[in-house]
Length: 417
Ligand code: AMP
Ligand code: MG
Image (tube, rainbow, N blue to C red; front, top):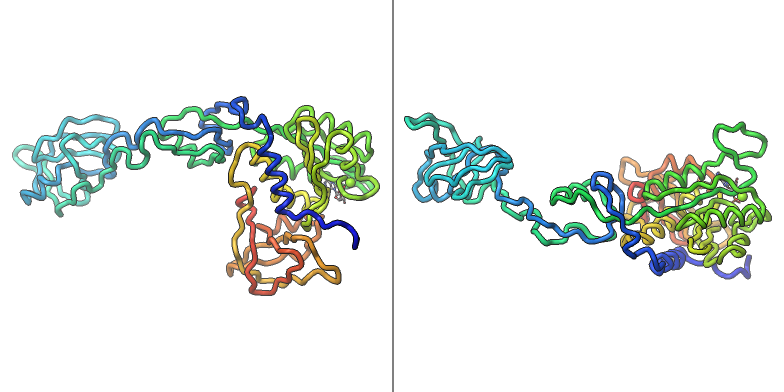
């Protein structure tokens, strides 16, 4: 161990993956753009900038139920009694305002030509006169009050959404508000997955001695679905070199990226590394993080390959830190790194024992009601309950002791899952 070369840091590994994603030749071509109805484009990645074809609002409109008038009619003359000359509902067009009168109108209705101000109905009284109805202003309005002006929200010709962003509910609403029924988005990435391990069985099967239920399949499927990927599941591969090579070959033929779990460490039955070297090339192996050290990255034919560790917590952590940014960057997303926040640790975390810890640790924690972080007592890399209990990770630099009250870097799951 003493003579082993230093492991690659997380940052180096991440930049290696992101560079590989950017250099991928085909992903930015027009062939990777599809047009999708706006109503189902949630979480898709916008393929080109969207320019507003119209102003929003596209006409001057009322923000309130009330009365439209010309402010100078009320201000200059001090007149507070204005006859109601017309009624305009939302979606209807009125006639030009007769000078010295007010138009009854409702929220969203067009302000008629000749009016420049809206007085909300709570600020006036309706009175009956010999000619009909009139309003008495309870205060003199400011010109322009309660008016939404043409183009106030969006100017025609401005860029409203940028290429490379993941579309959220509010983005879809904005696109719809300027009339886009379909949107140019990146086609979903095709991701092939399989698990390795002779010990693995599927939920529904009877647990025999030494068998382990395949939880990583469920973990990866859900994480990839959240990212909008098209998943091709190749099941479980037994721990032999031949079977692993065959599975890698098949999986790579139908996908942009192959992701596996397990078999990537240094055990006698870990065949991912030699199988990848036989079928393609290995670009990176082992990273200075804990959990998640045994990670492999490379290529097979025209597919990328990522081998995740078998321990479920290691798979989860490496997915969030490396796989997610990689898959997003493959689709042209700019901001891919998990955001982190400075939060107070309400726990003690000792320096690693006698050996100097050179790995960046990711601790499973939970925010408490005092605004600090609590630590899950069992930080083992097989302990899935630590992930379910917690709501994020502490990014702890190598060999760093954490004392109660220290400020640490917290990555909330809510921003990356
Ligand atoms: P490996 O990386 O193959 O050496 O596996 C490390 C540990 O993770 C072993 O205890 C495996 O049984 C476990 N493991 C591997 N793959 C899975 C999986 N798909 N689901 C749950 N546990 C797994
Ligand atoms: Mg294994």
